[in-house]
Length: 250
Length: 250
Image (tube, rainbow over all chains, first blue to last red; front, side, top):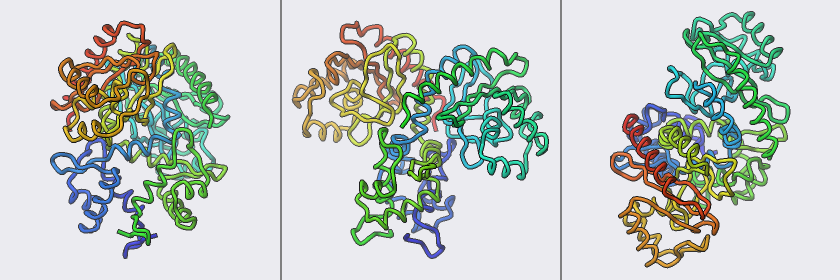
């Protein structure tokens, strides 16, 4: 519908505009958005005006453009992510209080791990994952858990694609990754030392809804820490989240 | 750009489609979306297909349509709400641990209070506010705080519009509301017994960023509870959030 001469639809152009915003770039001039979205200047300005009128974008006092509160509201209000993170937040807080390290909840999205919630602990070390951020499936404890229980076609795609090394412990050979995934399915847990960063061990368990793994719950431990207490806390939390999801099933 | 014969743009039609999703309605048939968005059937089906291709909507195994993870990611990733709630979450957890009642963070959006975070306490009573939900500015403690520090034109609009009663303590007369707002600006706090529900007292303080009130932090107490300890906890938390916002200013 409403395709431009270059063949892209208005919806695709809207996505390209939204994609120019990142955690490091929350405010931009209209001309910067147009350039980054590879849109002709007049097209970009007209589209941005429409998005501002609809509240999906906002202009601040310096005439810079930001993502709109209305967009946030519409994207969240009826979202399954909201149900998942509301079900998970109290249990995640208990994990964080017990383990005192970064606690994450991630889901599978377009062959990557998408982090939908993160609780940070002030005493905990650096941590690469953040809310609405992504990590490769093979190179994070949450990603490995999601990959182990993903549909066969997702696993086939990941196993035949390049497996870049993020940390010294990242599995970079398909056969090694395949064995790791089999072991994860057998034990129902991930303990991945150095998969993202050399100094850390990612630990993850699955969260199921109606029998299907819908998320991975993980903590990032200093590599010298015994992972057993964290795994016990994660398992208890996953059980609580699953009970909450049963109560709120749509 | 790309207006239909009825004069609405593709962007407006996208908003109408997204507006059909609510916390109670996270999955719909394409035909239901078209009817609720008041779009002709062929237009609705074509637009939904485009939104599914772009990942902004998703189809589940029953061919029902849901909001897409990609939409959630794009709306959140570069959003100022994400910065605000990440700055606020640790302090909100401390409030909740101390006060053991529902704790909220709300911002002003289109003359309403939009709740961007909520921590619920299992022992706390019923509570009407929820994440990505709204309440009238005059009829919630968070809303009164936001209204007290809103731009004069926002206050003028609210004071000349109908002031519906939500609870026995809702201010429904403009003169009464005006006096309440003056008092809030003078004291920097809201204590609003029965403004939403007869059995509860909403208590709120402002959160400032670069000198401007950007949010209200509130808890809902049983009406018989002394609000002083909750106000002290909220003030301490607001100070922590403001310090965090100073550190992360864009």
